[in-house]
Image (cartoon, rainbow, N blue to C red; front, side, top):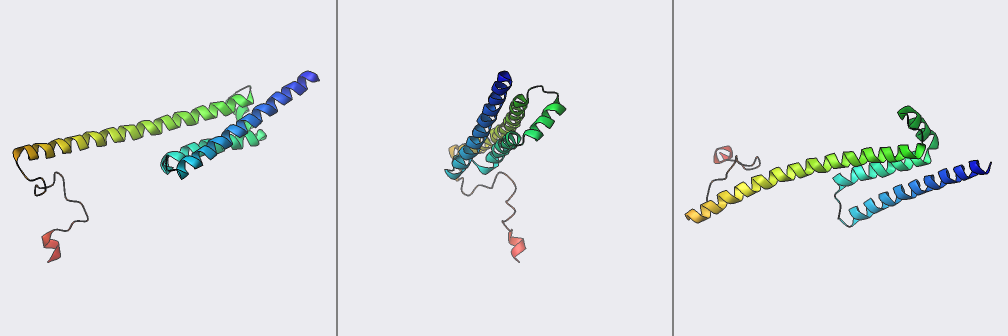
Length: 145
């Protein structure tokens, strides 16, 4: 009887800890957005992770059902497994952003090198033709007639 009460108290304590951590994560994300330290597109996945963990911690029946379906024997482990999946999703999202920024950085470095070469040759870069196609909002002289 005492062992069952201790086990129940540990499970309740773990549940409270998980709820507290997920609420703190959500509050931290909102504060980072408010201070403009985190962009909204990156915050969405963080908020989704925090809310999912909060729902699973509050909805004990849902957590138990998910635990049994996944074949996990200890319910709080399922919450951390789900959190791990979200961390993997965030790592993939950040890897994609880093790849995109690296490509943009390479393109900018190449354009800068071309401009620097024009300056060294004595050309005025202001009157040089653009490197790529004209932007879509710029109309040509034949369009105005």
